[in-house]
Length: 191
Image 1 (tube, rainbow, N blue to C red):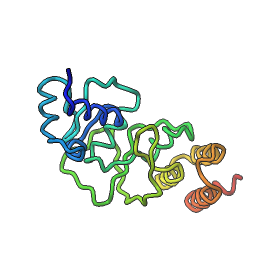
Image 2 (cartoon, rainbow, N blue to C red):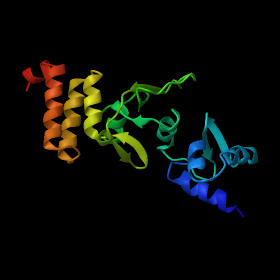
Image 3 (cartoon, rainbow, N blue to C red):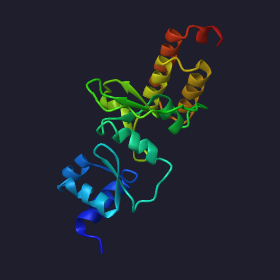
C-alpha cells in the first residue's frame, strides 16, 4: 500500500504529465531525497538534473514537451514553432522543441539536441497554459515566428486561424500584421 507522501507526489506528478522536479517536492513540504529513494525502488526514473518521472503514470503524447520545459530548472515555456504547432494554428512541422527561457537563465549542462532555447524575458500576459503545459500565448508565438523569419504563408495562416478561433484580439491581429509588414515587406505587396 503506497504511503501518504507517495500518493501526494503522484497526484502532483499527474498534473505535470508524470514529472516532478526536486523543487516541486520541496514546495509540497517534503524532502526532495524522496525522489532518489523512489528511483532506487524503481518507481521513479531520473530523466534530467533535478527532474524525475513517476513510472505509475502512463506516458502520454505531451510528456516530451513537459520534460523540455522542466529541463531548464522549470524556467522554460514552450514557444515559437512548437507553440504554433500545439495551438494548431498553421501547418508548421517543428524540427525540435522550442523553449523560451529568461535572459538570466544560464546552464553549464549541454542542451539536449532536441531542444532549441530562446532567451527572452516574457511579460506575464505573454505566457499561459495549454493542456497542463506552460506555453506562450498565440500572439507571442506568432510574433516569435515573424522574428525568426518563419515562412510568410505559415505566419499568415497562423494569424488567420488564431483570429477565426478568437485566440487573439483584433488589436493582436493588427499588431501581428503590422509586425509582419515591417519584417517582411513583400507580404504587403501581395495582398
